[in-house]
Length: 300
Image 1: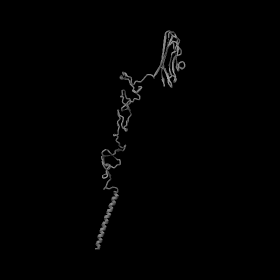
Image 2: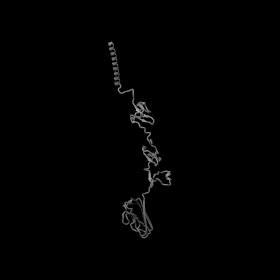
Image 3: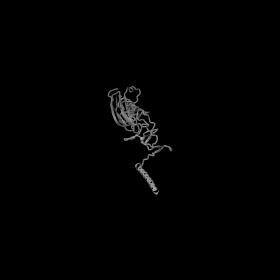
Image 4: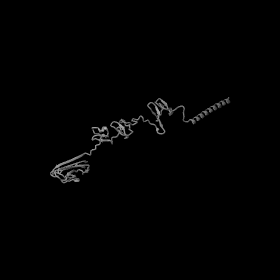
């Protein structure tokens, strides 16, 4: 009887030992081959305090609505999430079609109402909108985009476009946009005397740094008898005292003769704050008539 119990015990103990050894071996093998993978539970993200969604990888595709980790690799399109696109040359691709502003600049571009609108080409303002700057490629170009900086003239109040030759401009009754070709603002002084009175035409001093510039003179002498030549002086200063800067001689050799000399194209500049005088050096005879006229302009 005791021998039979001994055999049962040996069989039972051996069996239990073998089972335990097999379990240990199996566990050891599993841990070594797959140390970090569990097929029982995966990662999940909380959508709310009671709802969890399985985390998805990029192979799941676009239009995903759940299981997206907040790590910045996907963007929301308004309804769902899409993967961020990019390429090996430029990196992440950015869609700029929704930026406010004109993508392709065109004429009549309105002033932007938001700060992030930009005009990417050179433009000029026409008073209402912006136009692209144009280059001169031919005649009869449209006025759009043509700058007025070099083609406008000041009319004393505003600027006008300079006009070119055309049937419209040549027959216009009002002069606009035409270059003012007259000399600088001018003045003229004259004096006529009969008998023994000396003829004197004098422009008073302008004050400060103003200088008078003589541009033309007129000298006339007439007499009922033959007369000797008369000297005429242009003075930088008052009559009889200013420095003589130019002189002429005019004479009559016959009875009842008169003679005039008109001399233009002068550019005789006087001294600052000094009068300028044109005068006969001496009075004529009792039967003579003398005239002098001095024309010029003044510089500030």
